[in-house]
Structures are given as structure tokens and as C-alpha cells.
Length: 263
Image (cartoon, rainbow, N blue to C red; front, side, top):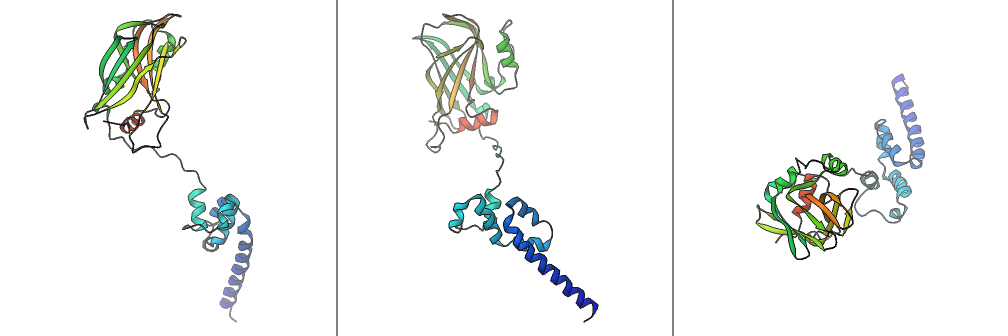
């Protein structure tokens, strides 16, 4: 036997021995380590491709699924696909724009109309750029924050008696489809936060029948005021709309509005 043949035989013997060792070790390690082993060299990769080792891995992660073979996936594919938590995917850009929207806001105290205005989506997006002087610090911090908000300034300012039922209704129309949807329907301002200088009302959004699993999302309406006591809120200077249950950016709000039950 020449030296070359002897070297090849020795190499094959070592590969065979190391392969048998790997076959004994691979069933004992977890999936992440087995994935790493596949990157070591071609021999390790080829051995680790055996679905038996991945069945051992999956039996530790999901013992019940190994009682029957997966319908269409190999155990390797099963592990790679479902073992790693996927990061949330960013929303694509909404086809809806605030340029297409107009909001109709009506505020009542008992049977008396207190405020009624049609407001463009772009105006709500611009927000309150010049708040009145002397506004409470809590509101100033809120308006100056980077949190996403839809606000409008109220002129002239008005005051409200807390002994009366104060309600708000908001409809929204879209120019691209010439349709209207409801955001808030005669919702009562049932909570006044004197420390934040805000009175709050909410209603649950109605979504199109094509989105039956979307529910329980509220639209919040806040009255921003300068002062209050046990009987009155004084100098309401702003109105804020938000959907903080589900949307915290312009694009998220537009997606939410796009799936309303438009008529």
C-alpha cells in the first residue's frame, strides 16, 4: 500500500469515527447549538441534516407534536420556522391620508349645542401651535411632548357646568371614496382629571364587516381647559382625539381609520 492510499484510508477512518461520535452527541444538544454545528464544516452540516436529530430537538420543545409526524414540514423546518420569535413587522404606508379626511365635531350640554365645527384632517394634525398664555403646566408639558396626538384649538373658549350631561359626537368623511364613518356617538364626559386639566369621553369604534376580529378599540376625546372646581370646567381651549388603545403614530391612526365601517 502506497503512502497516498494509506493517508486516504486513515482520513476515512477518522471521518467515520468522528461521524459516529457526532451522531451520538447531536441528539443530546438543543436546537440553537445544532444550528451552530451545521456551520462548522461540510461533514458536520451533512450529518446534522438528518431529520432524526431535529426530531430529538422538537421533542424537547414541543413533545406533543412528535406523537404524530408533522403534516408537511420536516422537523428541521419545523424548528427553524417556529422556534424563534419574529420581530413585529412595521406597517406599510397607509393608502389613506389626513389630506383626505374631515372631522365633524359636535359638543352638547344637555340639549344646548356648545361647540360645532368641521375640521380638516390636516388641521388636527398640525395641533395647537399657539396655546393661550397661562395654561397649566401639566397641559403645557403634554402639548410639548413628542407623543402623537390630534388636537385643535377652540375659539372662542367656553366653560361648562359639571352638573349637566356633557356629550360629544364625531363623524369623519373621506374625499377619496366620498364616505362617512362614526368615531364617537353622543359619548358622555364622565371623568374629569383636575390634575391634568382634561375631561374625557370615549366610545368603541365600529369596524367594517371585513375585519370581524378587530374590536374593543376606543376613541378618546379630551376637553383641555384652563381651570376647574367641583361645579365647572373653565375656559375650554382645546379638543384632543386619540386612539391610544391601538395607535400611537400617524400611520397607525390612518390604518385604524381606514378599516372603520364607512358608509
